[in-house]
Image (cartoon, rainbow, N blue to C red; front, top):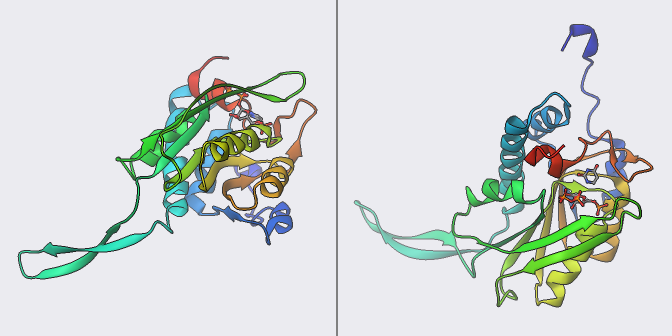
Length: 229
Ligand code: PRP
Ligand code: URA
């Protein structure tokens, strides 16, 4: 990028203020912000895009799993016996929203390789922007598990709300939602409909356009991950 095209960092987006009393965590780490900027660039090709989505998911996942419960177990080191902390409770369950959420799964699995993985298939109608669910397979029983729903884009919030609703109907209780870019419209909708769900956001953008795409966003996440356009 030419020097004339740079400017000092202006800080976290002002749009975040609206959500300061909501159940939202903005993942403002510089590494996440840098990688999201690379994702946005229209010249970033499929291979690099896919790797970046995985890396950002790993970094956000590290933040989202900060409150996993621990229990102490006895371990014998070469020096002495001691009680030492391990992750406790039922195994984690990841639920990517197909297609684009699939690109985030490996990032989380690199942190918790034993996690179970469920799937929810959704697509947005291009005219109405209303989501349609076409597939759902979630590990059962789910009640005791921490469930992390994955989708890089939170636009109108319709897909996220429907996916969370479906998981709750199937018994899910401890739910987190992880996205890379959110629009204020979508974040408003999810936090109002599901105040019990903590939403982790990589970057909060300005708005949606008339086609319900996030501005400035990164375009169609599914197409860019899988090279379908
Ligand atoms: C995208 C994205 C989300 C949804 C967000 O999926 O991955 O699932 O749109 O939009 P919303 O917040 O307005 O519901 P899309 O429907 O393009 O399907 P794809 O992942 O198969 O490309
Ligand atoms: N889905 C995407 O992939 N991108 C957007 O900007 C909105 C919905």
